[in-house]
Image (cartoon, rainbow, N blue to C red; front, side):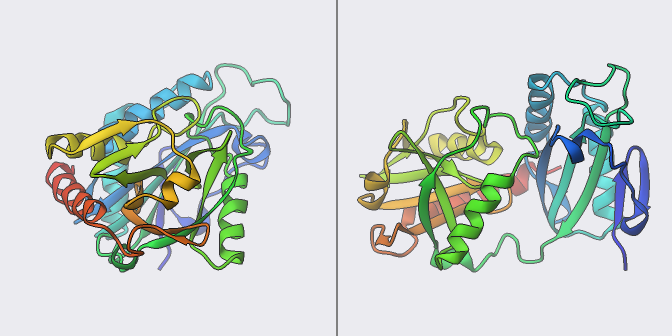
Length: 286
């Protein structure tokens, strides 16, 4: 049975949803996106995702085409129509279809293109990978320097993920000027002496929604946090390492560039933070 998707105000079978070949998202990568996780049929961190969406649009000089209430209604309707218990809702907004290809922005009254679709992921919260951890490699960070904008320009992260797979591991961490920026689709952390260390917010990394929630929960649990950059060598010598993202929540990292981190198994801090995040996020889900 085909999924029902949202396209510019309509709910359609996925086989009937069409976007113009002249859409700026297709020919220019001129668009932004958000991914909101669903647990128990409810949306996690929804308001924060909408705040970041608006920020990303503003940074690209795009007007937000819908209100938060309209986005929420569409997300909820798609979850219901597609019977999603655990999974994700993907949202993409592009600068729309100017009718031809041009580097210059189209007229201001050009309608944006708004796409939303669901992905069913049974067992999302009980991912067995979280019990064994993942292995990562490091690669140079060659992306543009506005990584704080959540654009649809994801080719380099995709290449990095494939390089990781080719080298027999799970993911890659980007390194710039000798320091870790972030993962291919996640924010990165190490734990040393009970202290959680993660890079401070800037244009160099995505301002992760899960990151913000997790750090708030960690502070409430009286855990020490230091927002600073760290190197691959520091990660390899850490007691624990992990990453956060909307779909993986808190994921332990047990190996970096072939070197075991800590005991080589998920550590107590990452394990506890994952439990806290899931518990608190379920309570606040909408």
